[in-house]
Length: 380
Image (cartoon, rainbow, N blue to C red; front, side, top):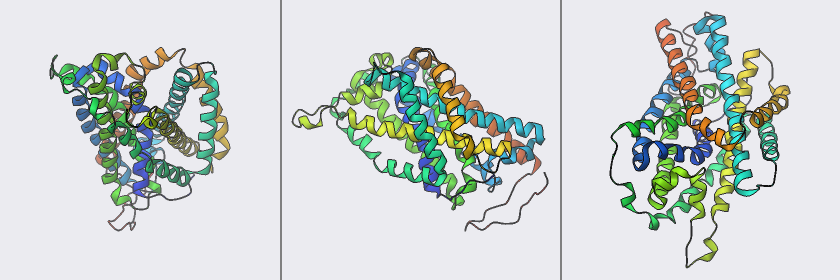
């Protein structure tokens, strides 16, 4: 089964950013601050280095098999059973991330804006929209992501209005409890950045593949920069103690935007929420699309489209039933999801790359001008 449409490496980069940014901005800051306190900005640098390593491994692996996704070439590396098992792990992981995103969206909307509306309403609406976007295909999804990306700088402009309230003393003393808390604070953002390994599902559909490594590293750097801006602003304005107690520190941060001389700029959190809701839809759509593509290839289907709405209904049920409260969701975000993302995207992907290098396996090669060379290995 093949996906229709072609995208550019730049579009793939924005796709990678979209799969991380919306959820990372809301949940990750409080998790990091709880562990690293005022030194949380140092954790961000370590997480960025880990993100570089993950996308380097994923890109090297993907470019060895430029005409196939990881679900397709895994059986060539590990045999039929091992390859199918790895393909199932990746496919399940994408769906797993998808219903996790659905629940995050529902919890924030029900907690911050519509406390009297059942959470299922928000989850179902987001799920239906993601199903529709996935049905339209990868090319349409990436075009929508690019449109959303045009408005992303507004995110930074809103934060600039809070620069005047930052107190440098809130970052002192530096490394008060040593390097341990800084390393612990790295785990959550490292898990989110590891999701950018999704590039191994995109390479077969990218027209200018020779740029993929550079654009993937740029994606990591972009998310790191935006994340650092949020962390520094949140700590500088509210302090580590306050941020660690908040469920959604970024949301609280934007509610503090106030310019006395321009009252029209009050309550700019509405603009932020508009951008965030669009980002959550695209975040879910990227997970859902990757999962549906992987499922279709894993089952050997000609098209995954007939399964989109049944699988969407299943993910909706999982999003509703997997957590009993927002407290459980926060614990899951702190202890389970980052480690799962690191295992799948770093450990499993790194293992596949080692096997490919050790056995000398590769698919068709891509020259610098995008020309395909004969396959170096055609054996199953």
